[in-house]
Image (cartoon, rainbow, N blue to C red):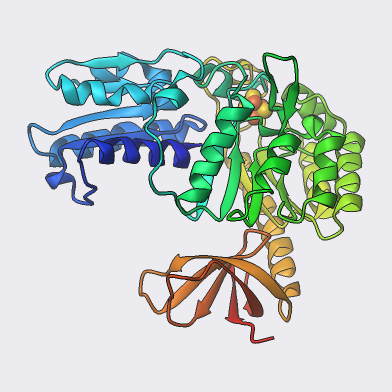
Length: 422
Ligand code: SF4
């Protein structure tokens, strides 16, 4: 979501005649787009703001947007008095106001709904992988999560608006569409005639666009994985055989305290249905270790589920208490050293599974999306249907989109390959 927001902010500034620079001292406006999911990220924002303040031109505008802005609000001005603006994730479309009125201070952290999408300028060029938000906010209220506070309750965009953006992205360079939402598979929109649209409808319609070759979506909540959506994996070849469906913990007691009301059997049933629909599907997950009250045996159960599902890549984090969340004041907070130890064990196991999967790909030929050259310009970076990075030593070409790549080597982090001549 932040990548999308950053992309739209850049487009807004571009429309005002501003060009990007990577030198802070050259910039006329500096914006930190922020994430509040973890405490460490929030703290980093303020040290970064201090650094920017010391390096920037004296008359340069600077401020923060996104979830930390929403979290700290006017308090940001108290901590960094030189800040010009603080805009929450649903009000960054107000950014041009500060350009029109640079002497004023701008604070807007409202949860205004979905108006920003109407006010953002139309896209004139799109990245090869284009992120299209279809809903914002979340109704699940996991006890550790600040998102329902920073992004608000769940709101789905209209089917027509999403398709308008998707078609615009396709016409201006997108080859892959990634539908986005905090609870993306909870997408539900009812039009004025009472017709209900789900994520499966968006996928079906998007697959009809000739320029779009690949479709995916993130991030999915397990119990919202409805049969119509699972069926899409069997009938729509453009939908990639890869799904991020976070489980967070393998221990029923911990899931209960997290307010994630699904059973392990229920979760495994969904995985089995997905595998029936698309035998080559691979799953990734997010994990939180050291949630309040997590015992050794709870943690063992998390390792067990990782072994059972064999997630091909995952994001695992130490539990991080966030303000205004129920888990932050739960008893039996886990000491930092235990969290650290458990995270290292889980990371090592997930890393092994990932390496084994990657090594199993050697010898296969896969249709891969060309993302562009690497920094040296000597290699091309492709993305497999399972989101693995595949590096090909060949001269970059601008006209590549999807090519068959034969995988020749693998390690945990990436693959090596060559353009298939078959
Ligand atoms: S489902 Fe995801 S976004 Fe929603 S409250 Fe839970 S962790 Fe946060």
